[in-house]
Amino acid sequence: MQISFEIATHAELPAIVHIYNEIIPSRLATADLEPVSVASREDWFTSFDPTSRPLWVIKTSDGKIAGWVSLESFYGRPAYG
Image 1 (cartoon, rainbow, N blue to C red):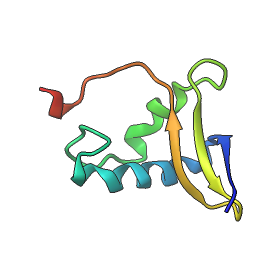
Image 2: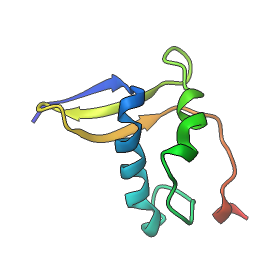
Image 3: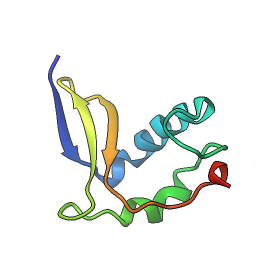
Image 4: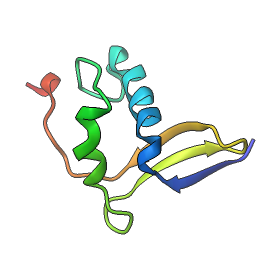
């Protein structure tokens, strides 16, 4: 199976949020305690810049979003307190 990395589009934000929310209960990759909404991630999404702070989606050869990765500045979360 081949994968590709592509700059995320706004239309892909719901898929990104869904993937993010799936990991919250395990606390393996995030320190958020509650699921986030697409609406609450709008500002987060628009803060990315493809040249300096990119947000990529990882797609399978059939175009399905399998994951995402981003570069962003550190910000505190509830579990860090």
